[in-house]
Length: 285
Image 1: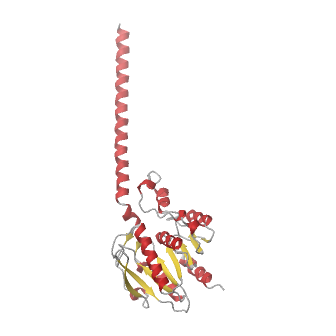
Image 2: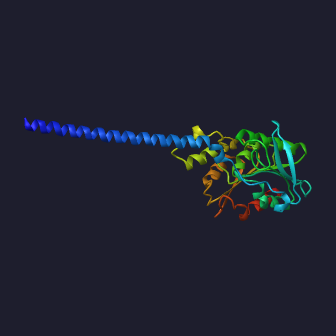
Image 3: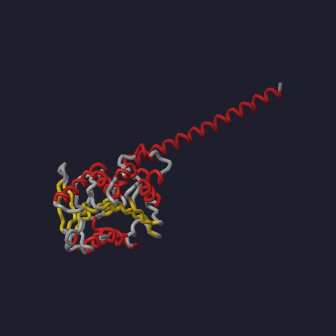
């Protein structure tokens, strides 16, 4: 009888212990689920500010060494007014470079690049994106691509041959314009991505980014349809958008040449001779 009572007591103790452990595990799972839901919600609600990062005030071009550049106010089809920096070609029959900058800062941060373009005799049209310093509106994938097409058409109406140059985020815009405007003379992709959603998935593998992300800029899905000659530049040490993105795009394209830049990072490809290669390509007989 005593042994039976002891056995029952032991069973009750084990059962109670199991209930406590189960309760703790359920509590931990609930806390984890709440934290995860909070992270997902934060990323969803703040995705635009993570993708588009306007900073500072747009300087006067002359203050950053671009005294020959005009500041234009250009109304888009929906009434949004963009600010753009522009200059005509100094060399007869030279094309105009339609330059789409990266995700952060403002046009003034790209003054050295723009100076190299102008020094080569080419024309320039460089818009400040919607919501970026100097321009009205809010950025989005559809709006930026629409703006890019309208700016291309403006140059084409003026009889300019157009080189589309995209830097980082701008590669998604430049590629989309090239896909819809095959008359472009050249497409230059500087540190491109296969898609912004692919970059996000690599950075946040624990998040369902493909379901969360609105502006995915899937260049990989349209590059096969781009017939414009394309130059892709990517550094081996690019930690922002790894080299395999540029390699994958080149593999999907029948018109692209890939320039792998040894020791190049995300922002220093021009110091490794990017523009020299572009200028040489455009100057070929």
